[in-house]
Length: 278
Ligand SMILES: Nc1ncnc2c1ncn2[C@@H]1O[C@H](COP(=O)(O)OP(=O)(O)OP(=O)(O)O)[C@@H](O)[C@H]1O
Ligand SMILES: [Mg+2]
Image (cartoon, rainbow, N blue to C red):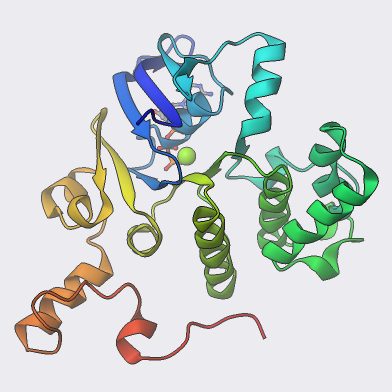
């Protein structure tokens, strides 16, 4: 099966700087939930910006549905109707005066009818639990609220591939839970999602696959395998995931059957529902 999005031997150097990475390859299959992890300065943001066409590789190519990405204006516009990027810092993304205007910008630009634009904006605001903020000026919102607006703006475009740079950074626990369920629902609907994070537990709860950048090399594979590889995690300056650690202890004391999967959250172990917004 052809990957929906692929990096084929990508190399990248910022002008006048040494290479961030060389000949890095990655295949992302349709509907995948892929977490990208690695230390500060490891190259996560650089990789995501290459994958969304925001940076042009020094060598190698990005492929969408098996076709190489072109970097002309028309090719990039077409690409961005399918692949959406959400910046780590919402202030790099938001520009309209109000939340409603910002989230409707993309759908309006697609030439959709007003009723269709309104439906998409409402759905995206509901997904990010920010419907009451629709009339608010974006510059008066808190960081976490602006972050949700930025994600809603990308969701309103209904992309085939959604790429998020540290989507949970700055969100409160209830905001992270809401994002997690939104990402799961989008994934169940067939959206391919790539998200960078330093949060190994978030990656363990959400991702099927992970790509770990450590010392300029990329290690990719199933989340359950890579997130239990303590040498690799240490190399990438990452903590061990909470779930596999607790699973190991519970199995050792007979608190979990030997073949049961690792717990994904404290709530799962305690048998309670996760905190959501009142
Ligand atoms: N605009 C730039 N110009 C020059 N070098 C840059 C630029 N942006 C990033 N770099 C360098 O590229 C390397 C990778 O940075 P990148 O931002 O991709 O890392 P990251 O994994 O996203 O880190 P973090 O966890 O801090 O977000 C770093 O060494 C960084 O200093
Ligand atoms: Mg980064």
